[in-house]
Length: 69
Image 1 (cartoon, rainbow, N blue to C red):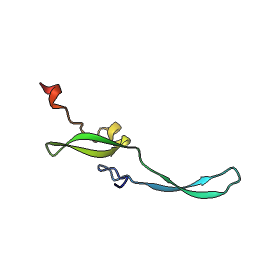
Image 2: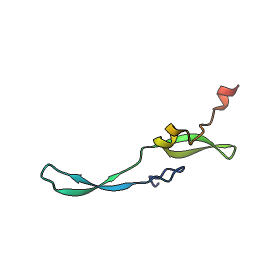
Image 3: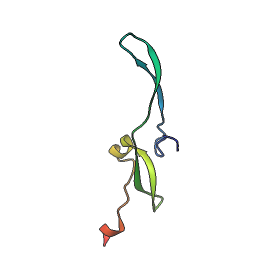
């Protein structure tokens, strides 16, 4: 499964790890993805969303059926 946010499309980023002696090696920075039950088009389903989308309110979390009754 790819490390991509299903809302904003944020994916991995390739950067350099720089040592004390200034040697550069490649490293991968992955987004902080969380598996969340969200309401999408009127139905509840699990999606993988980055924490920035959760914090900014781009995702509407689904309420459980137990909490409604």
